[in-house]
Image 1: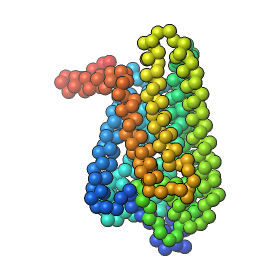
Image 2 (image 1 turned 90 degrees about the horizontal axis):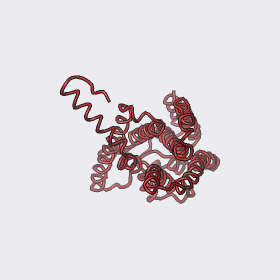
Image 3 (image 1 turned 120 degrees about the horizontal axis):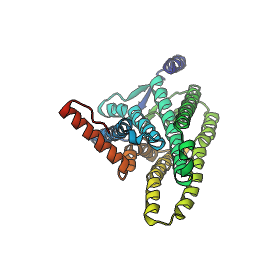
Length: 330
C-alpha cells in the first residue's frame, strides 16, 4: 500500500520534473581508494551488527529464563536495530561498489519511512525499558502486577502503532515537496534533512511541523526516562550494601550508556538549523545509523550474566541435540 502511494506520488512529480525519480547518494567520499576502505568498513560493521543483534534475539527467544519484561523490550530493541541497518547499509555497499549511485523517488521515500519508523520505535522502547528499571528497583513488590505480560505487549503494540503512524505522516508530508535542479547528496541514505535541503519549493512549513512533532515524539520519552532515573538513583543511594548498590547501578548502566549514545548522536544531526548542515553531519549520521546499532549488543551483553548464561545454554543445547538427536531440557 505504501509503495503504491509513493510510486503514484513519484509519477505525479515525474510528470512535472524531468528525472525527479532519481536521487544520487554520493556517500561520504567520491575517491575510489577511500570508497574501497569505506566498503570494507561498512561491510564489517554491518555483519557485526547483524550477528550481535541476532544472537541477542535468539538467546532471549529460546531461553525461558529470559522471558521477562526487560528482555522482551531488549529483544524488540535488537529487532529494530537489525532492520535499521538492513534498511540502509546494503544499498550503501552497492553504491560504494557501483558507478550508479541512484535511488528512485519511491525507493528514497520508502527508505525514509522505515528509517523514521525504526528510530522512533527505538526511542519509545528505551523509555519503556527505563520504566521497567524504575519498577524493578523502586517498587519491586509490585513488579509482577505493574509489568504484567499483558501490559508489556500492550505497551509494545502502542509503540509500534505510534511509530508507524508518525513515520507515515512525515513521509506523506514529504510527497508535497517539489524537487528540481541537483539531486546529489553526500549522504549514505535518504534522510529527512537531506531531502529538505534538495527541495526547490518552500519547505518552511514542513520543516516547522517536523521539528515540532519531532521534539514531542523524542523529548517526551526522554522526560519519561529522566524522571524514573532520578528516583532510581535516590533508591540506590539508600541501599546499605555496597555490593547491592553496584549490582543496581550495573543493571541501569548499560541502558544509560545506550540512551546517551542514541540521543547524543541523534542530537548532533537534528538539533541544529537546516541551513547549517554540512559534510560533517553526514559523518554524524553514520554514528547514529551504523555505530549505535552495532554497539548496543555489546553494551547490553558484555557484563550481563543472564545473556551469557542463555548463550551457554543455547550452545550446550545445540551440541547435545547434535550428539543425541534429542533436545536438552533447561
